[in-house]
Length: 271
Image (cartoon, rainbow, N blue to C red; front, side):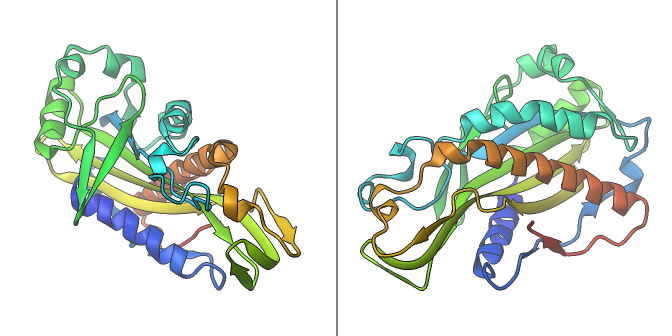
């Protein structure tokens, strides 16, 4: 996955956060698709299912001096491991291209012999640690994608990347744990896809963001102890998985619409 693609996803996420409370729209751009690269006779293989390693969210005062990856439940590995069946469920039954079964990809000599890249992505001035779904290898070099497409004997390879967050909205006052009003939390997932052909050309690139309905809402009258304890991240793994699944389904639907000549908006609903 190129830095440009990751930045696009993170920018979409940042924009969606900035409009929370007044809108549920993310600005992601239209799907970028090479239409001649897709038809039912074209073969594609999913070769990477990666995510930013750490789920982001409210630390709380107890964890103020800890890094996010030291807080229980923030590691996204369990989520993307469970996401694999949903990805193949969304892409495997499509009529736009033929998807190579996961077992055939992972057991192939070409994939087994692939040298994995370091699980780290540089985005501007930040280094993001990355997770890769079980059985898959992390790939950051575009030329490796092209070579892998050739070695697997497919027309193209697909890589998916996710970023998981727990967003929160508070009442009108919150100072050092003292809050008045209402506070709620929800899982938010940014999903992106990129596909390369045997020449290393990008033939499909898109991103989306989905936010679950608040899953942990509570009325706050005087004292909000969650400001001290922070977010229970593990509690949001199931809804994060659901939103990632919904994201993959949306990416496929946007590809379908693009190939059919239907309008694909740059403004996407987060819900």
